[in-house]
Image (tube, rainbow, N blue to C red; front, side):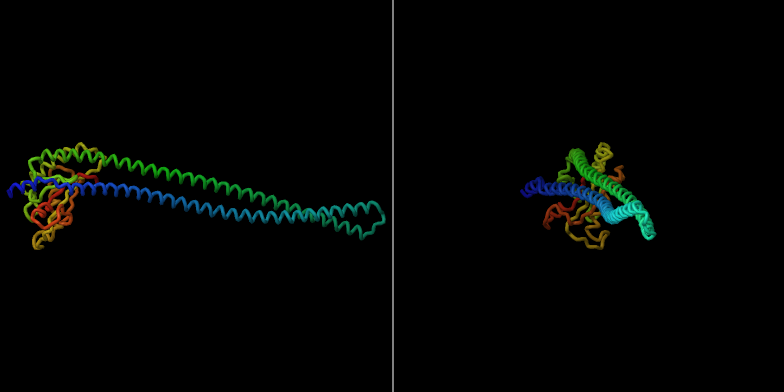
Length: 343
């Protein structure tokens, strides 16, 4: 009966680790999508920051030109007021000269003093005419300067409009890029999942005679006792035979996966929570788990698997499949996991 209970325990399917692994995969996908979104937001913020600087500079130039234009308009108004005053004086002087000329023409007995006054008025009138001419020249110059300022403001407004249009186009392009990246990511994940299913299906067929080799979620789990001696990190003969089957299946599926999919086989080493003595080859479970994962990776490389498609990682005793300090729990936690994933 004890043997029967042991077999039922071995054949019992533990769905919880698979559920946890599925959740972990989903979280990783969500984290990747969030990273893409953050990257897009970062690029957008960098683009907007640059555009804001240009807009601020253009607005400052417009404000400065507006101030100059207001000053020029004030100066023009002053000149026009002076010109109006001069023209009024000129008209008054013309009227006075006409009156004196009429008096001169009407009487022949006008004195020399009156002639002098008429001459002085004529000189003053000529001077007023010269001043009026200079004022008109200044007004014309101011009009030209105002026209030039208006042209500059119009050019700046056109440049500002172009910059805003480009900013809108950039935002649209960034949003479209984010959508395209999400679609491409979903397609790659779906395609890699299909090849992962094919790979695991072949491994199931190859390792169907080994009930101690299990599938947990999206990973194949090999008990450490199948591959290594206790406390050692060199593959034993039985472990080499099992890993040779995996290497052949990996080479076959690797030829089918398109080159643009950056896939890797991750080899994870795990130990139980029994501490090492520290006097042997390995100081602790970290070093032992890493050495075992690396031994499997190097064996795959010796069988022709490209090194760039392999990753070795050691987790020590910190990622157990089963909690507890029983012999059965510790045996389940001592393992090598294989996971086909994306780099």
